[in-house]
Image (spheres, each protein chain N blue to C red):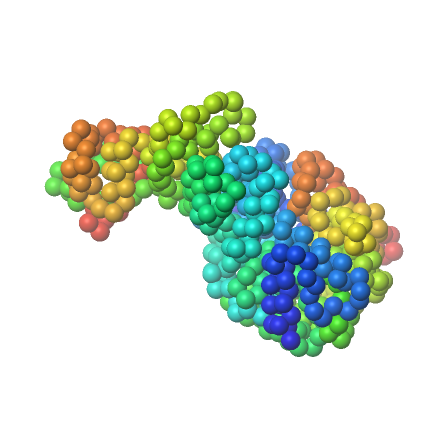
Length: 289
Length: 256
C-alpha cells in the first residue's frame, strides 16, 4: 500500500470533495485536481486486489479519504454481518481513512439483502436498537463512525416522533458522528411536508463531521422526489446548504453522483459551487468580526 | 415490531406482483412504496448486467432484464456486498426454459463469473523462471508452484473464449462456428486487463495438477495421460504469462 497514508486519523479541510468512481480513475490520475477529499463506496473495494485497489492506492497519497458504506444495515434486526465487518476492518487497516460512514437505515432482513437504503419507523425502541448497533460497530472497528440521515418516501403508522428527533436521539445515545445529507433532508421535507430548516436547527452541530449534496429526480406517478444521485444539485438544495453552513459553520462537503455519471469536469464544477458557498460564509464571518 | 416490519418489507419487495406492505400511514404511501420495489429490481438487475455484460449483449437488454427479475426472486442477494450477487446465474440459465436453444449460454455465464472473480482477486508478485532453474537438483522434485491468485480454469464444449472476445467493446464483428470445438481455458488478470488463454489439454491437466501437488508429481501425472507432454515448454508458458508468483520448497517460500 501507499506510504503516504497517514498513521493517525487526520482532519479533512472544510471544503468540497467528490465521490471517486471507476469512470474517472484515469482522468483523476492524469489531472489530480485540488479537492479536499475523495469518498468511495467501501463495498467496491472489498475484493482483495485488482484495478480498483491499484487506482485507489495511487490516488490515496494525494487526498484524504472517506469510506462510505451502503451495506452495514445498521437498522436491521438481523445480527450484525460478521463477514461484512471483517471486510470493512481489512479495508480500514489498508487505507487508514480519515472518515468511515454508513446510513441510518436498514438494507437486509432474514438474511436477504435489498441493496437499497430502506426507512425506519421513528420510535423509542428503534432509537435504542439502532444506537446499540452503532455502538457495537464503533467498538468492533475501534473508531468513530459517521451515520448519515436517509430518505423516506413513506410514513409509518408506528412512528411516534419527528425524523430530526429520531436522528438526534440516535447519534447522542450511540455517541457517534453525523454525516448530514442536505439533499435527503430537502427530499423528505418536500415529500413529507416539513420545513428543512426546522430539521437542521435540531441537529447537534458539533457532531456533524461531513455534509453530502446530491441531485434528485421527480417521480410523477408517485408525486414524489426520489434521491437518485443522478443529477446536478438542485437550486433549492443549494439554498438549504447555504443556510446549513451559516448555522453550523463550514464542513467537508461531498458531491455525490452515482447514476448517469457525468464528466469529471461537471463534478469539479459542482465542487467549485460548494467551495464558493463555504468561502462566502467565511468571508461574511470575517467581515462581521 | 421492527423485525416483523422488516421481514414483511423484504418478502414483499422480492415477490412478483404489487402487494402493499403493512403499517404505512397515508394512502399515497402505497403508491410510493412502489419506488422501493422498482429500486430493488433496478439495483439487482444492473448489478447482474455489470457482471454478465456478454450475456446481456447476446440476449439483448429487454430479455436480460426479464430473466434477471426471475433470477433475483429465485436467488436473492445474501450479502451486503453487491459484488457477491449473481453466482448462480449460470446454473439458472441451464434450467431456464426460454434459452434452451442457446446451449452455450450457461458456459459463457460461467466464464463471466470467473472473469469477475479474477478481476477482484488479490495481486501477486512476479517470479522469473530463473528462480526455478537456480534450485538444487534434489529440491526440484519437491517444489510446489504457487499460482497468481486471479488464475481460474474452465473447460467448455463451446468456443466460449471466442464468444467472449467477440462481444467485448470495440471488438470487430466475427462469425463463430459453434461446432468448431470446445476449449480448455486459463483466465487471469494481466495488469489491469482480463486475459483468456486457451490451453492444450495436457497443459490444462498440468496446471490443474500443479494446484494440488508438487511440480514433479504434476509432471508425472500429466505424462501418464499425455505421452507427448513437454513439462519444460509448459513451464516456460506459465512463467512467460507471469502466472507463477512463488515457489514453496519444503517450508520455505521463495519469492522474486
